Amino acid sequence: MPGDEAEDLDGLIRRVDPDRWLTSRFIADPAARADVMALYAFDHELARARAVASNPLMAEIRLTWWREALDEIFAAGPPRRHPVAQSLASAVQRHGLPREPLESMVDGQIQALDMPAFDATAAGRWAEAVESSVARLAAMILDPAARAGAAAPAGHAWGLALLKRGRLAAPETIAPLLGHVLAEARPAALTLGVAALPAALPARLARFDLAGRTPGPLRKQASLIVAVATGRI
Image (tube, rainbow, N blue to C red):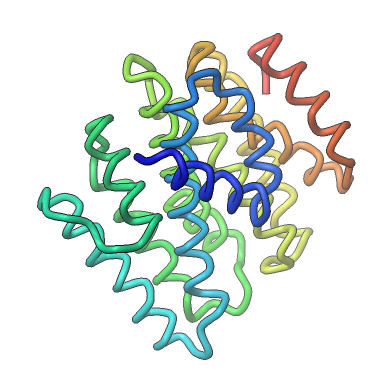
């Protein structure tokens, strides 16, 4: 992937997803970090497809466009002339990423189109389909030897935190579920190893959401440093 594309996606994620961008600073390998940025940018594009569309039909058309982009990527043909599609294609090729979790991300967003609000079941299903898949893929990129599924509960927790932040589910609905999933994520993350741990780091920040706190960047960074030093999210 050309260096300017990597810098553009890094800047995009820093602007639209500053918390997860902050966790990516703990990825030591610049090439792996760029590939994780491509994955996060894909996640952003899918969420944006829902956010900017004027109605569910238009959102589904946008999401179908990304599903077709995956068709091209996994057919080993030239990817669409879109920086995220091109960067994602490079990451898939370099790391041998499977299609299933990427497809799950698209499916999760489509299934949520008719949900103005999420109950506990829908919230858990969406977070698992979308953000657990992101965390699994990030772990695969960072350490091919890691048990990538160990990052999935952390992604699940992060997805629930996003729903809480966006007020897409009632806090009294999300908080108990988030607490339960975080309790699963902590021991699972301990098995990831140093290289893959950044895939689970967003869950460390989800702890603030569970507590109803909104710390500044320095407090978040300090919390992440502790997590990396101890291996405990």
